[in-house]
Image 1 (cartoon, rainbow, N blue to C red):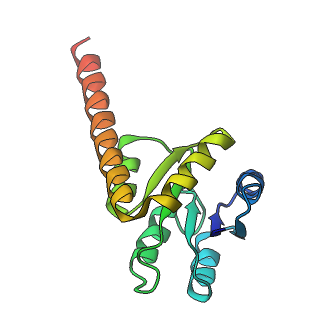
Image 2: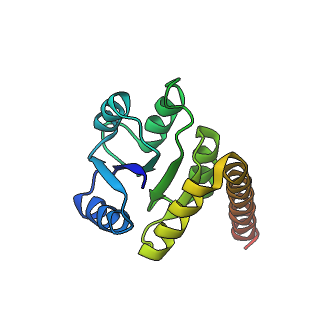
Length: 154
């Protein structure tokens, strides 16, 4: 099975992620912040990173950027799992190279499905998912803009 790095500052979130993914037979390593994650990424080759965005000291956006700048780790798939679900955030994830996005709270079955798809999908499936994320971010942005305009006309 896959070697997965879970990066989240909340212990409860890491526990849920750990037990969900471990139950599928994956080898799990945990990091409680971005700096710890980057150290572990330098030492170990992971098949997948599951990354929170809102963390102290170093945001998930910054971690994602640093992963993509590591020549030996630049292509590792990264699934963002976060309570921050807004158009600008999703767009920033896409631009940073995230492979997929899951909003917290999530169902364990949703996480399992996305992880399986990312691990089995290869490059073509990853690009398809990223395009879908881009469209979602654009759509969220358009809806937000329409709501803003509607408030201005009231």
